[in-house]
Image (cartoon, rainbow, N blue to C red; front, side, top):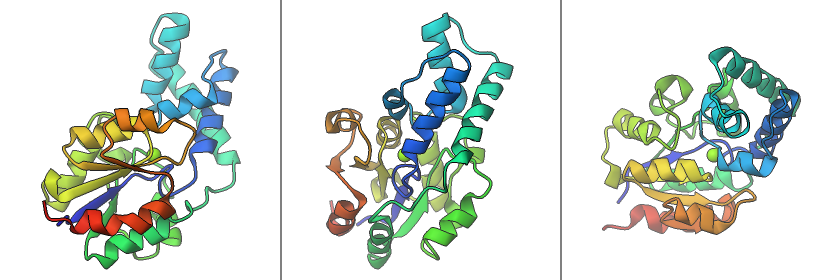
Length: 224
Ligand code: MG
């Protein structure tokens, strides 16, 4: 029997990844750097600085300094904010409700640091998440694939890794959940092949949050 489900946010609860990928691509291009949109999905979960350095190392043979990182990241945020507010992922509310129906606590573990985060979550998932145990950008030093965000979630909730399930859409997030010792459910809501998510350490894979909502209860109540 599990007692905690840690949901990633972008690409799991909100259909925001296409906006992030496009914003990354356009911001990089403005600075003469090339990050194809498809590749941006591979970097999901990394810190902004981490993503920028991968591209500058590859193209310029050096890391970006702090001022460059700030300029590029600000541009990326500008582009992202020009998009409409991301919609709730279809099936996500049913999935979170299914967790609640099992008497299990759902929390959010995200690298996002958007100021309006809590408000947006409450608008879209009213009363469903336990906010005191939420983990966001300000709580952690390292981005995914470091297990820190998920370890922090376990710590806040006061449970051990064998009592928790992670729900993730991104390879680096799956790696982080796996490294934290949790059972990891992959939901492939993006353009990457299933194999990439499975090779990152996913224990099971679904193709939508709707599919996950149909199958999550047995995973939560199994007594291993
Ligand atoms: Mg994600």
